[in-house]
Length: 290
Image 1 (cartoon, helix red, strand yellow):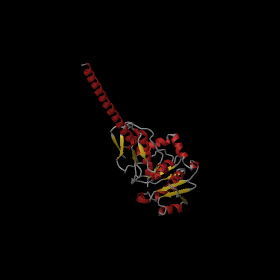
Image 2: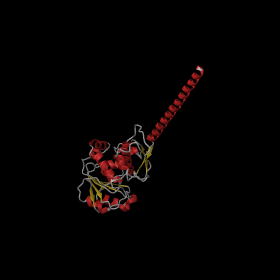
Image 3: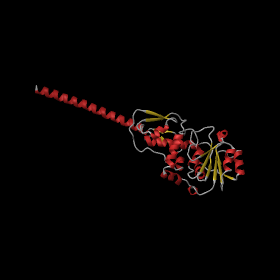
Image 4: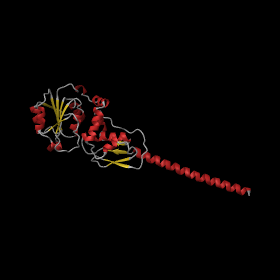
């Protein structure tokens, strides 16, 4: 009898141990599954590489998604990041893992700002609604203005990256940027540019364009003895932005020239045909009707 009780007791203890072991292993497996899932989600990379548009569009998207990445700790594959950094901008890179929930948020032009400024989405997962996401809004431009014009340290970083920085606030030159190409039919026309050229006194005049053989370029170059500048994007933006007077066209590239013109008087055409976002909203820029 004693031996039987001992045997049953041993058997029950063994069964209990076995059940506990199963529960422990299941919990360990589930914990590993959650960790693996969170790790995969946290390391998942959203890509904007190869999205539509030229350099100006790339910069806008890169900056917007950099702030989204910084606020929500998500990985971003940027588009042409090295060239954006040459302007002096820093693009955020994730350096730690964040546990994420099952909520999925879709980023688009209609809502991207809330993922920059709102802290309620830090543990969500993200997708991009469409490749036609440009992140060009009045709200974002004013956000950038606050970040780089009213923050002296950030402003200094952009100035430091400019190889022509000694020209800042140290010349009496004018730079005219004329966007033509596939949007020539939206250009403000010769009268717009001449109306500004005639009312300013300048020493040297420069002009750049994506269509250097266009008759408008030859006309303005010859009549006002302008130097045609054929630099790459970075050098053009950096040099142009140091001139005292900036005469812009529509478009994101022209906007970038103006944005870096910290000490310039900046003119832009009244937007009558909008083929980009609502970006010409910097407070001290002067709108010119045509």
